[in-house]
Length: 69
View (cartoon, rainbow, N blue to C red):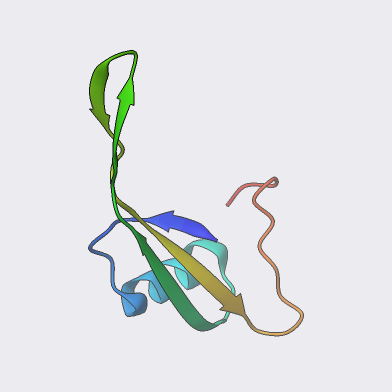
């Protein structure tokens, strides 16, 4: 799973992941999270909207984020 720009399209996410991590991406699913207002200590605050991308890789491949890109 990756947190991506809210305007990012599935094709651009796929190309970026393949280029950065040198893996074969089979499919990309996206989830849009809408921002919400909260009241913290009597003040109104706002949580930003964001998009999550769930990336499915070719069998046998993986992304090791601990090792770095």
